[in-house]
Length: 323
Image 1 (cartoon, rainbow, N blue to C red):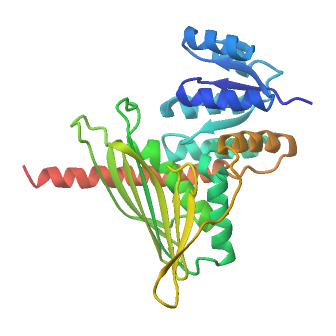
Image 2 (image 1 turned 180 degrees about the vertical axis):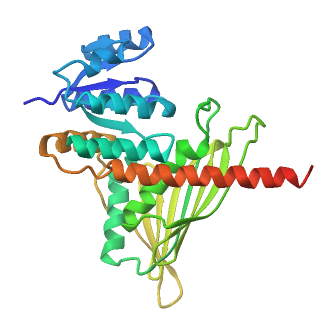
Image 3 (image 1 turned 90 degrees about the vertical axis):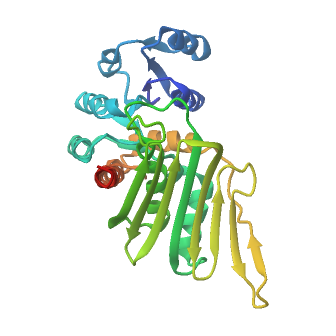
């Protein structure tokens, strides 16, 4: 039986979701506030369209709802969908506060519904290859992780700052490849380069169990896009450069003659978003817990909220020095 899925939010990222959901044959309805977008959807995919979210949650044929709207709307939309008995996939972050994220995760569990968060990199073939190498001990003991995620975002979302936009990728990816959740935030700093209180450059220092330190650098002001993860191990260092088309994952180690050797592991070139959408449908059908479930979404939101609080405290302290 076909699993009918409805999508709310068909902006720049929502269009990617619509394309993949349609390709795997499950897209049945699309909701958006912009009539021009809906006209494009209707002509492109020949599915039902609406400007009313109520049309989605009241439709008994719709089994799941995919939410790709601004962050501040995630909680309310996901909550309504769960209350209506719909399975839910919500783009990262799950909510704008950890108590909201906790409530959604609990609600899905009580109702026996799938709640999945769009932590895309947990479905990336290169990331899964790296995770397998770490679990097999190929890198040895993990000593340090560094994630550098930068782009040039001139249309910053006013309900967001850079860590809520970019850091969910870094936090979820690090936790996934280690199989561990961060135990604390050592430090968090951020700056508003436009002097509009919207933080667009940030640095986070995390600590994982086993005293494994990790650093995250996020920026909205770099014209040269950077998507780079480095994992230093006692045997080898892995470099995952997702900005590349080929050789995204490389391993480096020092030979006995002190020369640097490089290895290039192989993995599939399947589109991560396609794999993520297929996983959502599979979880609905089988009842299995999603790889990026509500609990993992809650953990990421909890870390982000704590990091944001540390940033505000640090910025206030900095201002007081000049008063």
